[in-house]
Image (cartoon, rainbow, N blue to C red; front, top):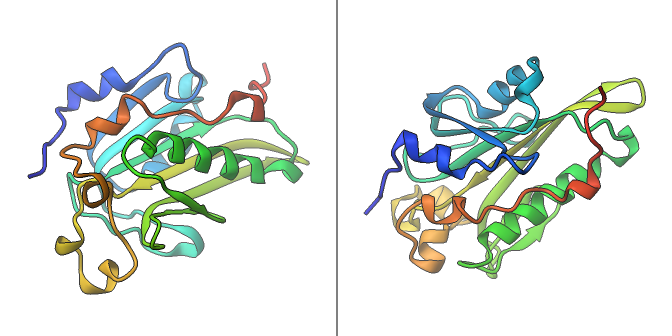
Length: 199
């Protein structure tokens, strides 16, 4: 049974003491959490804001692939940052995000990182995916959006045959009842791998 999280409860996942996830913005339906996080970066308080949604209508993965997820069963989140790191070090953003997702899921499943953007179960079935989008200012990254999708309550028996052949969820791996069970312990990407935004 899916346990839907009240919109107001998402505010409890925010942690003002952290840069990543210091505030949370919830949407029942949105085109793309990555697009919204990028738009939020245009404002001064957009850095570190986490955008979550129950349903994405135009969600996407790497190389323009569609990200398919039913409403209310999975965790879809994007965070915008102004890291100001050298473009040559852009790979650190993906590494840090993958390690953070792995750590957040660890209490329920020992996921493996399949570079560059997947986290999988021991049998290779995909549980989570990342989409890191960056913008450059000269030779430095001026902004980045860290997109994260985690299959939480989407049981394999409810997936299409095509998807179920190569995917699973935390619900199947650890019998979770709700997305909320993982948000309270979600780890943020190591701050040491990102410099503070320029003033």
